[in-house]
Length: 93
Image (tube, rainbow, N blue to C red; front, side, top):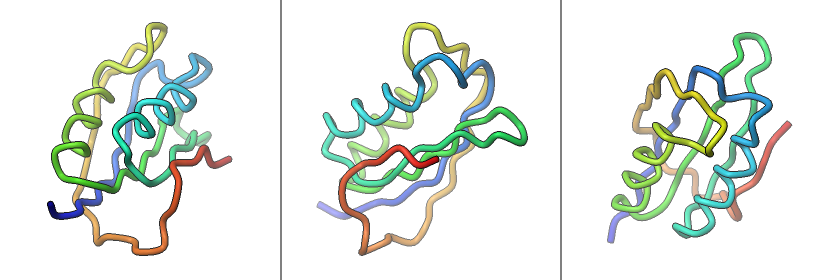
């Protein structure tokens, strides 16, 4: 199974609704590596996902929904080069 890395920007009502914590939980359940953080300048959430391609794709689908209080307006994603130094899935500040 090949490793895939994707950077995603999630827009809408995604800050202050537990989006980062829910993203970390879902990513860990899918055994993904990477991180999630709020982008304070424009109110988006940035996510780096890395792992088996099917798990990354499932996670992108989940980002369109998010946790119950989120109001996702859009998800922009781009395939990136794999970062061989990533470990666990973390919340970054």
